[in-house]
Length: 298
Image 1 (cartoon, rainbow, N blue to C red):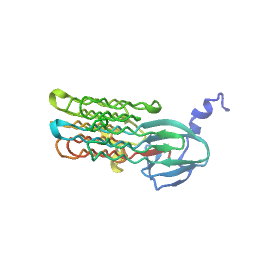
Image 2: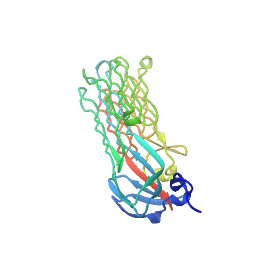
Image 3: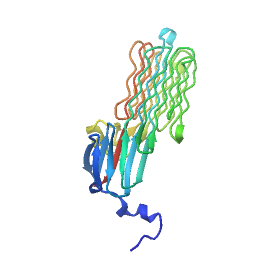
Image 4: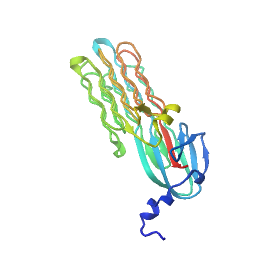
């Protein structure tokens, strides 16, 4: 029976690629099979070549941003780093070609109260680009507002605003700080970062990431990918802001927690795109690296 419409040519089951249609890979991806699918987990840059056109599933996660550092005196705090953008593309059409894969690294946390956290690097699957989050704000004048990014960085000190998210139609804003009491949480791939809570001197929690079913929680745990919560796997959690009394929680999806005192902010988890957690007198946490996962029929 012939194809009855243009859409049928892309949605018919016989257009779904199988492992036999993947003719080559570079970059040493982790490979395996489960539930009738073959997966290719790229933690480092490389490529994947398809021997014919068809449909596959793709997840692209950018590198998370580093967090800010506060001066420590009088409760000045750093904001959490924004998570890398996570783009989940089921039934993505590819041609008979080699697709270049780039994995973005996480950005450095601030080591100075007069500098923001550093944005991470973009991840990509050819022209599908997952941009990074914005760096978290610090204490220094002119450095308190979180940076703009796919997911915005949290504000640092003196009621500074979080950075705007949503660059490239993806992402969420970072949370605002409270005057001298807590840094804002970094934006996550699935939700905005929370603002600091002045009444309890608590840093804002990082925004939650997104859930993807491209691999199971078992495979994710085995290969240290994303963050598993129950049976779900999250990617792109924002970093928590530092607090005067309590640091903000990291967003589910690899976000690092904010800290208090001289403790260094928690790093975002590698291979998750999580943002780093803010520091009060300690340095800001670094962002976690991103990843790319491709899935076809086994």
